[in-house]
Length: 398
Image 1 (cartoon, rainbow, N blue to C red):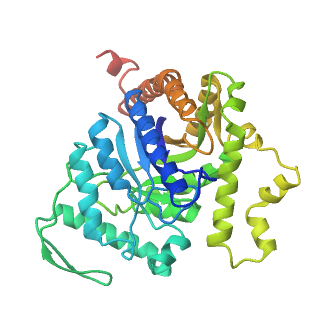
Image 2 (cartoon, rainbow, N blue to C red):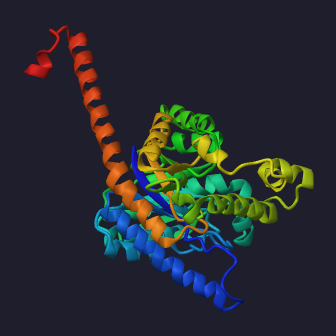
Image 3 (cartoon, rainbow, N blue to C red):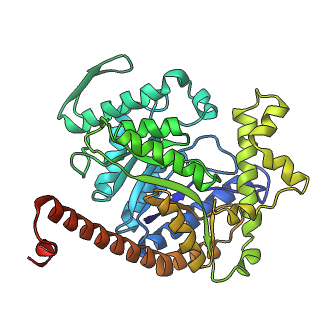
């Protein structure tokens, strides 16, 4: 299993000052610190960094323009893959031409390091942009086909249900041929199935769930991949899932780093956002069912460390983190997207977490991968010998 990163450029409230300076000061800091963290991760062997696209988010996800940040990263990193995690694809968010242009531009700047994630966001953003929500899944696929056509054809034109576009040369074309690999965001079994049916990589964007539940989502995806009809020219069958990650020399550092407080900030912020923007139409009783831990925590009936004990998050010493990561690998995750910068964690603590993961955890994961590859090759050789009737060991020793 590979380790990647997921960044939202969170700006935890309360901010140090009233408008207009509180928000501006926070955002100036987080953009600089988060970029420093990603540059370090590039040097220490992390596979990819995925940047979200979110609009109008307060407290979390001050990242509406991921292509600008990815373009900057393309010039100050060397090997880490640069993931759009994700581009909001329905036509009301953005014209397919703009998607083709911005993804290809970052791919050119990075010399072929782009990964193209696709998604449709949530009602709060969809409503603000006037998205046709009932048809948004179909619009994702239609937009993707348009983008691929713009990359593939010298001149492109389209007269379809969702797009009227005259014959034009769309520039630039991507560095990768035929184009960057496509992934699709999902949080449920049905959306994971959609990603699998369309031959896209799967980005599991549901957090703090038991590994048994995560495995059900992944299994639905793998089953759908068996009969996939690729939406794009690149067929991808990989799973990326994200969770909160923090690695420290000792658990004694958790208090100094404000880990548990930061973890609760994450859950509380997620709940408050959804209750305010996505679920305001529900009754109080229905809202409590959606986020039961809010009331349980208020009554002192829930301990935030439960997420750690159930391995819903990956926190601990390097050895502890490795053991937890192996469980994600066993559930079918190909790349764990580490959400490293959340809540009130100090910048230097996040940098140290990246260093520990890069120097002491990633090398061990690579050893496991090499061992698994060797076992797989050995099994393949034995199967080939058995089916052909060749004496055992002949192929290996030939």
